[in-house]
Length: 202
Ligand code: ZN
Image (cartoon, rainbow, N blue to C red; front, side, top):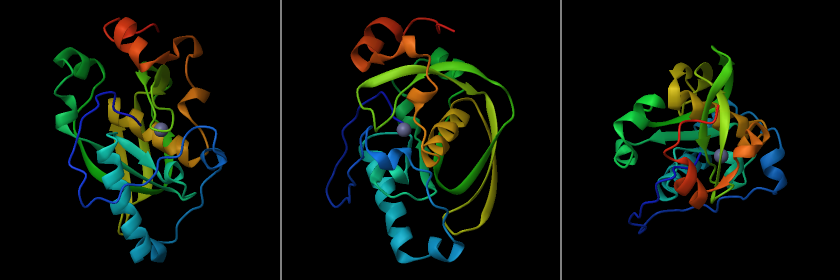
């Protein structure tokens, strides 16, 4: 998932992966599950590290393997405190947005703990320059494996729950445009100009 705040970061020594753009069929496939022994392989450990670097460079708060052309049930998430500096306290509070440490989701299963009725604008690194309001569940439970292949249960709410829903959608071939309130679809520029400070259209 995109972070609307663009920043610049030192690029030296990083392995940046090309982010696949909407329209490519890999974004519409159901990704393949990973076996625990594959998770610990150098190939997957390197992929995770390269996805982390690519996510930070973008910058974004989530990146799913299909977005870098790998049809695997793997996504990385990180919502850094520095991304919140340009948001107001009210925006952060309304979105229930708090920092989330870097972590990996593998073979995730998601369960909504509330109906999909919280609407906020979100964007996607595979559809740069656009945003739309997407109704999502306020809270979710995710069962997955971590980067060592160890089982993990995550209960999340607010913005973190939104990021989880967005990234796990990618692993099932879905994009936010499939769930958006289509009349709110907006360029980033028009979002900043007309919508950013408006109460939600919900
Ligand atoms: Zn996305």
